[in-house]
Image (cartoon, rainbow, N blue to C red; front, side, top):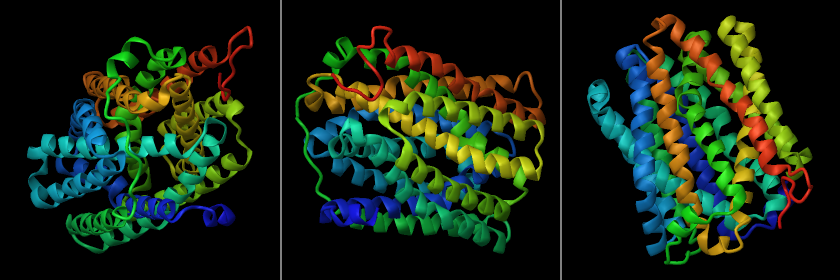
Length: 408
């Protein structure tokens, strides 16, 4: 791996350093942000509405971010993403105890930050990689981003535990702001590549690649799960079983170490042709481990979930993203249209997130607060398993003309 780094250009090294700083800073606050919001009302409603607000903000603002990327460059939008992430945490620090009254403002700021950042990130992945090597690149990038998250949750848990009340959370959020500011400074050394100023939005809507059109259902389904399950349910379930911020920090440190191991093994052995198999194994694994910890919320279940879930989620996320990127590349004119594909992707994904939050809020009518968490936690991963046959029929044709991981 070190030999690969030596071959990187200076600009690419700064790009990786920039994202490593960003990953460390957000990892300091990441899992504890959900706990902080939960403590403001001791129900899951505030978390659900926060997720809904930033999901709506992403759908609305991605078009604006695309316009900005064309007028400047995707790297500029990524840089502004750091700024709005910083603003998001400053909002949390400024309002602190009354944040529940400004949850819409917080959600909009976070949604805009995510839109700006991910426009730049997705464009960088498409520009820096080719389809046959993309899985390995995504896994290696995952290793670099996850390294920063190994120590961060443990440090945060220690800091929060050392202070009374909510003071520890404010210290952690301030530390996150510092790292986001440093990441912004480093980003000034990365220029990035400009994109065409002409929009092909309606062309992509009306006449995308055949694979992309079929992937809409996959992106929508992924949004349903990410709207509630990956956004806050995993954090709250593990927090409940772990029994405190310090234990949650220890758990997440262990989970991040497992993520690094998973990324390394998958980067070494996984191939583009194995994407559906990798996705299927990950989907079944996350479902079974979620059911286990929901049915038996004890220490041994937490350990098993901590070992299996990082591996499973990495298998699911990387395989699915690689297939989405490939479906973009199957458009003969994807170089000119790639930004429009990235923007349009957020429509089914964002709608799915909103539906996921609505489903979670609807479940409150049928289950009391104590039962809501474990039941919803074991239900949402079912969606991943239901996606397996759809992916198979998209990427495996009976006549053999198309296989996952190949190009026309």
